[in-house]
Image (cartoon, rainbow over all chains, first blue to last red):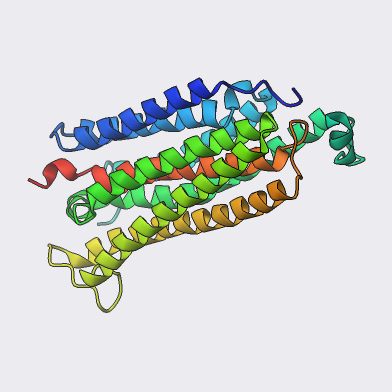
Length: 100
Length: 219
């Protein structure tokens, strides 16, 4: 085999069933009132689903280490973008504005 | 003979077909990282205003159709399965199976776009398109309008990516028919597969963030 050993079709179907189950779970959980944990769980389940798709459907599991570096760096920059922007909003009121 | 087919497609700057494949794959991942940053800007803007106007955004979010959103998520995940199976068929050199799975993926993609269009039509009928005709009846409509701007910008950009994916699948289908692919050379199928799964991942995040986060407050 030239590129990478093909995953079995059974693996793909198992991953698919897990993805559908997680979709049902995230929709079901959304109707329960869990306060802040609604958002936390929704994002955690989305991250789990995205990880399954990337590792198995996109074959990241068998990819070059260089591909892992590329994707990790992308996620680090995304984290910087989101965390610093939202941190600014959430902490802006902590120290008043001088002169007002 | 597979080796002959592979070497025929080998560009001169590469040592061997494996290196050529790895370069193509890494290049696609680099592109997908830029796409993460592209969508990341919108996700950041959405997160910012969701935190700033959480009550209004929550109320506006409950105007979206959660059933259609869930069905569309399932449709897109199924299309990812058929795409993964298309790549598998290409790896195995099974032309007939590859053709069938490419067509199935295209049909599922069109189902997704049709459902999305139905949702857009509903929003139009309800007057929830940002602009002069915006007829939102909840509190603070100017902030709710911002939610719908994010909704249309993010799902619209995602839908454009789906349309591009459909075009790429159509090209693969023609190339399959012309016997471009074999067990030794199927890089374009693999690369388009990466793109298709990436677009699926974007929707995996859009769905809970836009449709679900404030559902429990709907009462």
